[in-house]
Length: 297
Image (cartoon, rainbow, N blue to C red; front, side, top):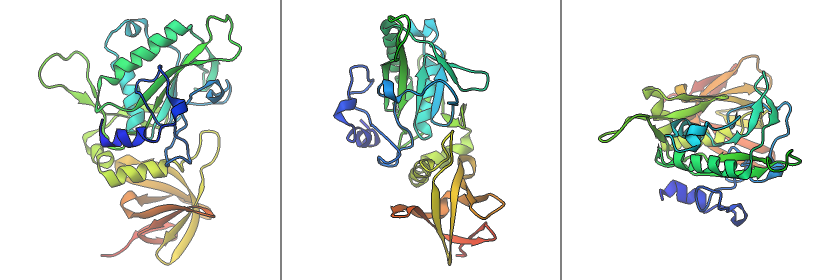
């Protein structure tokens, strides 16, 4: 097992182990557990209620898995789903969830346990289409008060962020010789594939670590992000991180008293820590009328 997967696995709670998991151990993560950016769905109580629950960076819904994939057809679409979460900041894919017209969770469409286990197995095969293989746990989750009683399961596919990406997905229709690979990522509520110029940002270990740390501070789909105290040269300011821009290797801050957004390069982040007052970020540079000014060499 790669060192990054081993480090994640060591943090696993024994209660999270299950024969339904695709790995013997996986991480139980939360916003306050090691800085990971998502919370896995492990039991009925973790499932969102139908209503205003939209898809977002760390949550996706699917009504079902195609029957031919359940029967063993190459599951590259499923592999794209899990690799995209792993290459970004982790997330949960919920199978058996019907979307409304505005992209929110309308209702659950439950399945029996046998079908749910077929879905789990399909994601196990999908993981084998990835290189390196991500840390993924798929499990049937019983829905409360399902009717009829034999149809009472959804499947939660929990994908940990991979600490040394990118994870590639083997493209369809290849046999023998060198393989062609794609590199999916999450961008907002969508999955798309990295362009060559974007690979460097997620491959550089320090930038990857900073991106994962900052992603825990992003706004939730139904609320606001955490307020952060920023330390610049000769100045402090309070604000919220609005988004991370991997293409520009930067993140965007909305300061409390500013009328404009402020992009800041990831390379300018000196350190991130938590104190009594909340999250603190030290920036190498200055703030001039809420515009970032780099330190002169």
